[in-house]
Each structure stands twice: as structure tokens, then as C-alpha cells.
Image 1 (cartoon, chains in turn orange, cyan, purple, brown):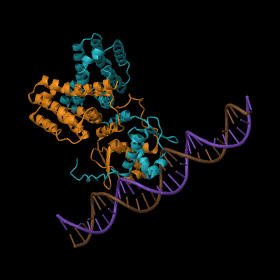
Image 2 (tube, chains in turn green, cyan, orange, purple):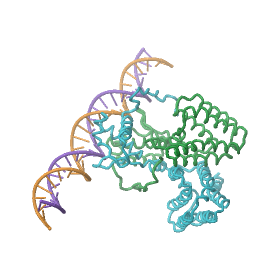
Image 3 (tube, protein in one colour):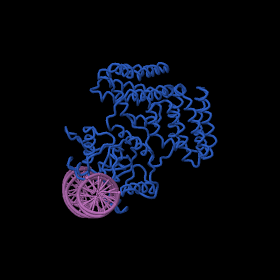
Image 4 (cartoon, protein in one colour):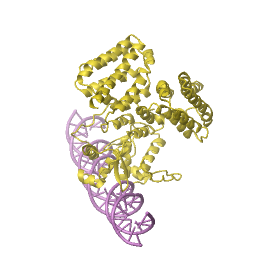
Length: 244
Length: 244
DNA sequence: ATGCTTATTTGTCGGACCAGAACTGGTAAA
DNA sequence: TTTACCAGTTCTGGTCCGACAAATAAGCAT
């Protein structure tokens, strides 16, 4: 799934010796951003100007720019040039959406346990900060599950429901982590579900969660939410037994 | 994002579904990897062969390759060619170590709250799964804090202590998330600390946590761990007041 | 203001050369 | 003969150059 354990950390060539010409330019551009104090939204010099400044060919500069773009540090539009951005989170997001990672039983258990820790674990704080608008929006998101067309769309809505739920915490870090994990969570959500399952069971479970929230009933909220997270897991066990 | 004017999404007529030529090639290479069933370690065709196969110029193929490389999907060595890898995690890693993001008060609070949810929230399961070897290793990691040379190293050891702690859960997802967040957490840890602080206060707090673990005292463990995570936060408040 | 023109910039292409690893073949040594 | 070694050749990625197409911001004309 997500990846193997962390590999040996490679020492990032410090300041001195630089690898390829492209790496040098990447470093120089980053220095330029730092030295010039450029902030998000500011523009970078044109490609040709960078060529001149760093005495590199345009190809080299472009490949360097590709790296910065891949890292979500700059955004470049034809004619207008490159501007500084910070989409690192959404880049990390794309990192994990690459090859089709299969959802093993352990992956399923781990991810759901993680979500349980966050969503159920922070239940008290969620209710504490809960506003009526939150309840309304959660309900509105959930009803969208009824008019869903395909699995992909359904899991997206399912995910946005839980994202909206944790957003109540006002914790940007958690939102970022959820964004990074989104591709995996989507697969988890689709595991063993049909379009109909989303429209009936998932919808009902979500609605129960929303009701508990509206009533500010902490215990009921935790109970329903935990059960909701567990449902898929039960199916997983059955599937395992069936194939075993 | 900005005021309207995101170029109207070009309708992906049937097959192509692509933006720039480079994006197309990236897509095609990914498809090639999938279709061919290439695994980590396998080799990709040479650049010139990819040019021929996808009817793209070598520059385009190279820029596409830069993206795959930046995403940690391929590793390319001169004269040898490109081989499939999976360094996505360490890439995501580097994503966050790019520009030195300042640690705002809110960032600090959010990250620590997140860690609290995980580490304190899973305290019962940690103790449940705790083995004597875990206690020994945690202690051994902590004593390394005593012989530390600089802040960077100290925060690394501090981090590895907490990483080892959550590793007891046996939840790979949590380990992955911690790996991704490492750069941020390191900054958090260094916030308002000196080398001496690590050697004395942090060491003592960790040791208290280990003792509580060794005694299988859940409440004490949670209490000490939560306090430990809070210490830096208190300092942050003082600093805020001082500068206000 | 509105619409057209222009100039600039990115996107893509094809070709070229280099340095160095990988492959080849032959020769000398065992 | 077999093995080991060495030089030449081939192949590949890394870099550079020049050119054209496409897109669009900016200036110009109406």
C-alpha cells in the first residue's frame, strides 16, 4: 500500500558538490527564491532569463522547472511565466494515487484504526466545537449519497462527509493528513461495497451519526461512528473466510 | 483559486484525455508500467525507444521522466537506463523539507493535538501490546539524548523515540503518516528548545513515560505523555506574550 | 470600452555532441 | 585450450542549440 518502510535517508548533497546540471539549477532557483524573499504568488524570471543568469541551456532550466512543478513549488502558465505556489500537500496526495495499490486486510485494518483514533478519539472536541451549520452541511453531503451514479463518485462523497466531520476540529494538520491519505481511503471505502450499499447502509449510518451529533449525544456519536468504521471490516473478514 | 479564468477544461475526447504532451507521455509510461506488469527493479525502455513508441520528442520524454523521477517512481542511472522504484514515501518526505516553513502557533497546536490524538488516544492499545523489548529499546533511545551534540540530532532522537512508541501499535499507516510528517515534527520539537533542554527536561519526561509504560500504568502513561506534548506549547504561549 | 494586432513566453520538436558505462573481440598468460 | 586482461566500439543518458507552434498579455486602433 502506502509504501515500504522508510528507506535509507540519502544525504542531500549539502551545499558544495552538486550533481547534474539540472540539480544545480534546481538548487540555484531555490536559493534565488530564498534570497529574493519571494512569497507565494510572486513570479519567477522567465526561462530564458534563468538560462542567462545560471549559464544553463533552456532544456536544463526546463527540466529543473519540471522538478519544482512536480514538487508543487511553482505553477507555470504559458506566456505568464512561473509563479510560486505551495501545493505540496496535493502533490503528496498524487504521490499515493499512482500505481494501483491493493487493499490488503492489514491495510484495511490499519487505516480504519487510524481513522477511529482521529474521528472517534476526537469526538468530544467535535461535539464541543459543533455548530448548527456543521450539522446541516453534513446532512446535505449525506443526502448526495442518495443520488449517486457510480462507486467512484459515491466514495468521493463518503470521503467528503468524513473530511467535513474532522474539519469541525479546525485542525489543519489533520485535514492535510486526510488529504494525503485520500486515495487509500477511497479504496477502503469501495472495498466490498456496491452502489446500492452506499445509497442504503452507508447513508443510514451517516444519518445516524448526524442525528447523534445534532443531539449532542457523545456516547451515541462515538458508538455509531465506530460501528460505521467497522462495517467494512466485518465484510472483509467474511470475504477472507470465504476465500480461505 | 484566482479570479475565475481557469482555462476551460479541455474535453478529453474518448481516448486521448490529456493536457500537455509531457503529461500524455507520463500517462503513457504509467500505462506501460501497468500493462507490462513491471515491478520494482525492472527496467524501462531507453529514452529513444520511448520517443519512438510514443511519437514524442526526446525532450518531451525527458521532461516526463523528470516528473516520474521527482515522484520517486523511477530511478535513472546514466548508461544503465531507468528502473522502477518506489520511493514515494521518501519523496513525500522531501516535499515537506523544502522551503523552511515557519512554525506558527496554530501549526504547533495542530500538530501536537494530532500527536496527542494518536499517542495518548492509543495509549490503551500501546500498553496492551507492550513487550519488555519495547520498554528496553525506548529507554535505550532516550539515553542517547544525553550524549547529544546539536539540536538537529537531538530532535531526530526525540522523534525516533515517539516513532518507536507508536510502532508498538503495529499500524503501518500510522508509521507512514509519521514519516511524512517528520520534517514538521522535527521543527516543532526544536521550537523553543536548547541542547540543554533536550538533555534534561525532554530526557526526564521521556523517562517518566517509559517508567509508566514499564509499570503498565495507563493513567500515568497518558498523563505524562500528554504533559510532555504540552510542554513546548506552554513555552510558545510565553514567547507570544513576551513579544506582544 | 471593444476588438484587433503584436510581441513575448512557454511548449514542443529535431538534431548534435559529449562522457562514460557496457559490450565486443582479440591477445597474452596460465 | 582455457582464462584473464586490455583496447576499441557501441549504446545511453546529460546537455546544448536553434527553430517553430501555440497561447496570451499588452499595446494599438477603432
